Length: 347
Ligand code: SF4
Image (cartoon, rainbow, N blue to C red):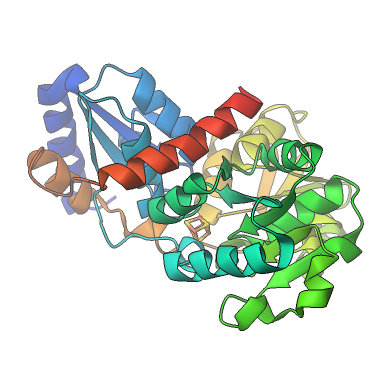
C-alpha cells in the first residue's frame, strides 16, 4: 500500500468514526481488498441488501456494481438513503437485457405462448427497470442460490418460464432440475422472436435470454483439465454463471456464498481450485492459509474494480449530497413486488 492509499484509508476511517452508527458500508465479495477491509459487511448482493435493511444506519454506501446499489434502494426503509461510489460501475450482463428488448420479448411470447402461459424469472443481476417490467407481469426475482427453487415453483404452477438475463445460470439450473434440454429455446434479443420460429417455440417451456457474465464465461473445460493435471486430488468449485462444460467437469458449483462456505468447510491441507472472480479467490486464500487455494484462471470484473479508495472517500465526505441512488416510485414499487414474490417462495 503506498502513502497516498494509507492517507485515504486514514481519512475514510475518520469519516466512518464521525458518522458512527448512521453509516453502513457494504462491500461485495469481488471488491478490491482495501475496500473490503473498510466495509462493515461483506457478502453477495442480496445478503448485503438484507443487512442494510436490517441495520439502523441512515446512510448505506454500497461498494459493488450499479444493480446492487439499486437493489438496496428498492429494499431500503423510508428513513434510509443509498449511495454508490461510482455511478459508472455497471454490470455488462445486466446491460444485455434492456427494457425495450424485454418488453418486446414479453409481447412476442404473449402471441406465441399466450398471455398467462408464462412467468418471467429475472436474475438479481439486472437493472431495477427490468425487475419492475417483470414485476408488472407477475415476474419473480431469483439469485444464484435460489434459481432452482424459483424455477421449480413456476413449473409447479403449470407455467412456462422466460429466464433473464444469464443464459448459463438458467441452463445449468434447468439441467440440474433434470428437465429435458430439448424443451429449451434460446432468445437472441437482437432478432424478432429471439431468432426462433413460432411453431418450434410453442413446444418449448423454457426460454433463455442470451446474456452472460464475461468474468465467468472466461473459464473453459481446458482450465479444469489443466488444474486436475497440475494439482492431483484437488477439488474444483465454480460459479453457475460458468459455461456448462465447466460446471459439468467441476466437483461442485454454487453461488458466491456457496463457494465461501465450500472453502470454509473443506479440510485443512486440502487443495481447492475456484472458478470465480479473482478478488474473492485471493481473499479466501488469504483467510484460509491452512488450505491450498488457487484460481482456475485469472478472471477479474473490471466494473467491480472501478470502486476505489478515493471514490469511496469522496462519496463519504459528501454524504448526503453526492452519488445518491434514486429510482422512480413505480420502478421501486413493481421491482419490490417481484422481490417479495421471491421471498414468499424461499423465505
Ligand atoms: S462479475 Fe459478472 S455479473 Fe458480476 S458485476 Fe461483473 S460482469 Fe456483472
